[in-house]
Amino acid sequence: MTRSILRWGIISTGGIATEFSQDLCVDPSTRGVTDISHAIAAVGSRSVASAQKFIDGLRSGPETEGWSWGAKNGVLDGCTPHGNYQDVYNDPNVDVIYIGTPPNFHHQNAKEALLAGKHVLCEKPFTFDLEELDELIALAKSKNLFLMEAVWTRFHPLAGAVREVLASGTLGKPLRFTADFSMDWNLDNEPAEHRMLNPALGGGSLLDMGPYPSVWAMLLVHQNPHNTDRDPKVINTYQTVYQRTGVDLNSRWLVEWKGLCQGQLLSDLSCPGHRDATAILQCAEGDLVVEYPPYKAETFHVVPRPDRFPGAITKKTTYHLPVAKGNNGLSYEADEVARCIRAGKIECEKMTWEESRIVQGWFDVVRRSGNTALKGLKGTAGK
Ligand SMILES: NC(=O)c1ccc[n+]([C@@H]2O[C@H](COP(=O)([O-])OP(=O)(O)OC[C@H]3O[C@@H](n4cnc5c(N)ncnc54)[C@H](OP(=O)(O)O)[C@@H]3O)[C@@H](O)[C@H]2O)c1
Image 1 (spheres, protein in one colour):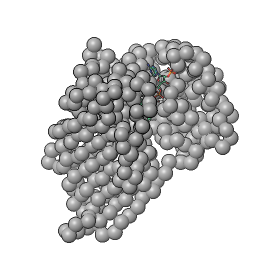
Image 2 (spheres, helix red, strand yellow):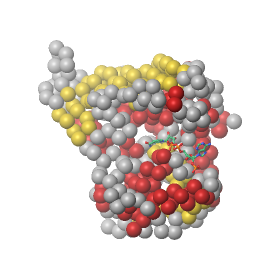
Image 3 (cartoon, protein in one colour):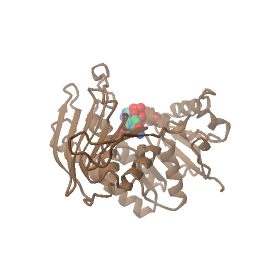
Image 4 (cartoon, protein in one colour):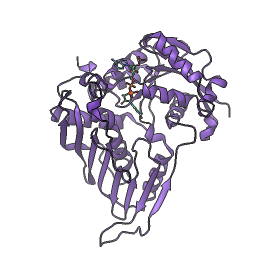
């Protein structure tokens, strides 16, 4: 099969934009991909010097890094540095825009990209609130352009294996669910302007880390063959305020899938997560336990029930599915975007707008029920 090449425009030069771009530079065959290749056609930053520095960094990867392959194999040929984002949206050599800015900018960046006629892959959280997201979805539909939230976890080898176990029916009906993304950020030593601490940049645990307990809620409960509730609601919430800047230090919320089960979700900036269990789905015949980290989980277990009424699962089975060597793990979502765009799709079946809308709606409820500095903020669509 001939490889189709997708030409990316990268918006921003921060941490995750770097990791994503590195993965575009990895040889696709390292992950068994033969139908797709990627090119980075342009990079946009708030200054042209930093866009150039970013490109130079990608061109000078040490030989030991998988992404050093890109510079030698044309991925960065003709890559243009731009000193603003709009010039990337307008660049005729770009097919799709990757957005890696802080959450409060996602709506504006994605909207401008779509208006310029470009497909969009936007980092999580998709937008600041549901109103912003709905505006983007309507725009993507009207312009017939691809739009997806960059929840890379959904495209990892482990996610596929989890889907297969659930589809096999061996676990039986879900009884309850819990998922957690916690990390000790040592916040007192960070400046108040840091994006995780700044309410105006969408800081706090909920918007940044909340997408990960949510992705497991989607994969394990929402997509579970036993679930029929297409609109699971938040029925209880709690947020602890970080007093120095007013963002949420942690957020907890309880979701109900009517007729099935409840799920307890947690994001926390003040405490490390539990290594052995970042998400747990307890079912009638046994449990499914996912090991930390929730964003790039590589191991899960199917285990017998611990109590005196045993289920049908009687022995522990471990599944270990690491991302391919040399890849950070963001390449899988990039491949998926390329395949969707090649097929003329505007929405991805593995990461649907419906599911992004549900999670974004949960965040709105948690944020508005709490007492953080983000409580009363509206996204740009609401202004
Ligand atoms: N998928 C994942 O695993 C993952 C991991 C980490 C973060 N994320 C998400 O990715 C997004 C970015 O996170 P990050 O950790 O990469 O952030 P970061 O390192 O702080 O980078 C953000 C970039 O946004 C640009 N920017 C534009 N206006 C800005 C402003 N007023 N203040 C700060 N930066 C501004 C800057 O690039 P220029 O100066 O070049 O314009 C900056 O480097 C967030 O939505 C986050 O939740 C996802």
